[in-house]
Image (cartoon, rainbow, N blue to C red):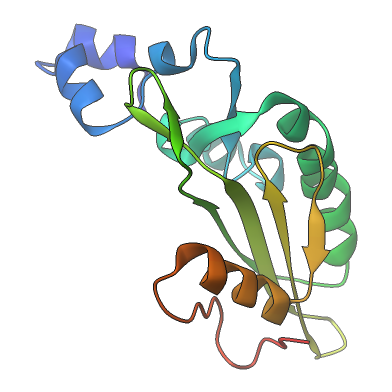
Length: 171
């Protein structure tokens, strides 16, 4: 993982070439939006893995109060509590494209942010859950996996959404 400055100073890649394929720091400057990490650094146990989450390919424009408020609580407390008896947890996160953008239409502002998880517990049972938040409110709804999949099916409007193998409970 390299910063924009490192790439432009040590390779033949220009800032314009970087901007042609991904968001850059400048896109967020003065936008009023946080860089919302889809894969949060705090959920990784090694420095190299944590550092890899700080790329803009792992971020979406997120409402400031949501990112620093209820979404943060979900990531740091709810996820932690729900995975307490899970040796390995599989997590899928995403964003639903919205109708607005920042930086002269370069970066889409999602309408919703969501996360889902499934794990086999130390008691040899499977548990799964999801969370979704509208990107203009400081509120996170924690749902069962089936409810999240139905919400995403409605929001994406492109067929049924199935996030995990059938072994992960939907209710």
